[in-house]
Structure formats: structure tokens, C-alpha cells
Amino acid sequence: MTITKEQLATARVLVVGDVMLDRYWYGAVDRISPEAPVPVVRVTREEERAGGAANVAYNAVSLGAHASLLTVVGDDDASHHLEALVAKTGIDTHFGRDADLKTTVKLRVIGRQQQLIRLDFENTPNHEILAGQTATFESILPAHNAVLFSDYGKGGLAHVIDMIARARALGKPILIDPKGSDYARYQNATVITPNRAELQQVIGHWSDETDLRTKAHNLRQQLNLEAVLLTRSEEGMTLFDAAGELHVSAQAREVFDVTGAGDTVIATMAALVGAGMSLREAMPLANRAGGIVVGKFGTATVSFEELFA
Image (cartoon, rainbow, N blue to C red; front, side, top):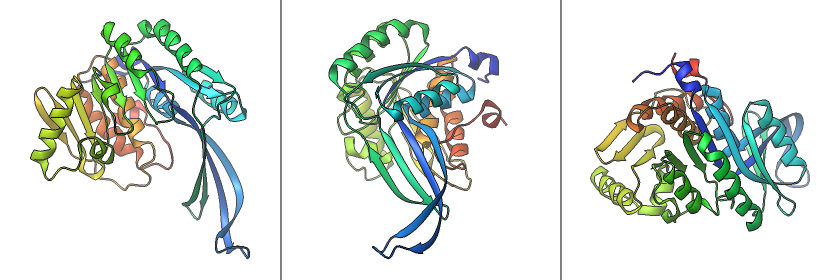
């Protein structure tokens, strides 16, 4: 099935999950500090990007779909920067604010074209705020035709079980980028998209493809999922569904930065499924989108034109 820009524009994706502000400080490294054996970075440029679930939603709109973002942030400087960044992209924002919460910030210091250190600022959201998000979720859900849960393990998806049940009751496709070793809470979703390391945490190591196939299908049946989509970096991707397996090879290209590639893959899947494609039809395109984005630096996105060039 081919898809037009007009068809993609009808896709409305509801992204729910943990957002973060990605800060980049770029600088020159000319010397080692006299205080400790560390490089001194003279910061010459600063940049801010929307990360986590906000980057996922941005990927969906970059392709030409419509996206709404439901999340919990602090009532701090970082949250206002983040909201302003997200608003510029045309994403509909539904930000719950918790005064006790620190909005997650990942600060990366870059010198000589490489990341020297990353500093993370974060804590966990308040359950009352999260419960309020469930009510918002319920009210905006009917207007969307795909739901994407972007789990970064920051606590924003404490009510995911309830949200999946509501989305499922309305027959919406549910896509999940999972986190952690307990996938029981993702039960009854349409598809989960773990990478190799994430899947190993849950099903253990596999000795060969046959072993992987058995374990992946077992997981799919245990959780009552339509499919498990395993993203495998340089080995491409494999979709395990009721019909068996579908594998696509990675797009051979120079890998510049793998940051956010998983965001691009699942956002592309959600946008295409929201526009009426099946998982099997959408997967090769999502694989291609992931291949394009690793050729860019930092959290990046792919346009409709790039994807269908």
C-alpha cells in the first residue's frame, strides 16, 4: 500500500509519556584543567530540543500527521522552555503541572564533535497529577486514531493499564515503546517496540533465531499483543505477529548518531497505522525512517519527502 501526503494528514496520533528537555552545550576544548585530569570546555553555543515523548510527537508531525502530547512536567523554568519548543511545532499540548516535580533535563556537553558528559536532572511525578491525566486522556482519546505510549521510566505512565483498557474499548491501535523488565502493564496493546537490550531484559538472552522466535511469540501471547516489533540496529527489524515473522534489513548508511532513532521508528509506525496501514505495511517505512535519522546529529526527525524520496 502506498500512502499520500493527504492520507497521512488524516492521521491523529495521541502521544502519552515522559517528556524531557534536551540541552546541548557546544564548545572548544583547548586544554586540560589544572584542577583535575578533565578537559576544559569553553562553551560557545547552546541549544535546546524537545526530548522523550515530545520528540516522538515531533517525529509524527514532521511526517505530516497530527499529534497531541499528554504528559506531566514540573512548574519550573525547564517546563516552560519545553512547552514553548513543543508549541512551535504545531503539536497540541496537554501538560499536567506538578510543583514538586523537576522537569527532566538532559544536559549534554559537546566538545570536538563528541559528547564529553551528560548530566541528568529529574525526580518522579505525584500520583494525584497522574490520575488527573487519565481524565484528560479519556476526553481527548476519541478524536485520535492511534495511541502511542512512550515510556522512559520516569513515572509518567503510572496509569498505563487503565489507559490501554480505555483505548482498547474504543478500538484504537495502541503502540508502546517499553521500558524496564516488567511488561505485564502493557498487556492488550497492539504492538510493543523494544530494542535488543530491552527485550533481553524481559525474555532473557536467546541462543539463535529459533530461540528468539519462540521467546518473542511466547511473550506476544502472554501479553495478548498483536505483535512484537524488535528493533535490531545494524540488523534491521523483525516483526513477530500471528502470521509468523517479517524481517527487514537495516538501511546501509553512515551512522552518525543513534539518539532518538527508536522515537522515529515508533512515531512513523503510529502515523502510518493511524492513516490506515497495517503493521506489516508500515514496518519497512519505519525502518527506512530510522535509517535516515541515524545519519543526523542528536534527536532528529524525518520529513514525508525524505521518507518517500
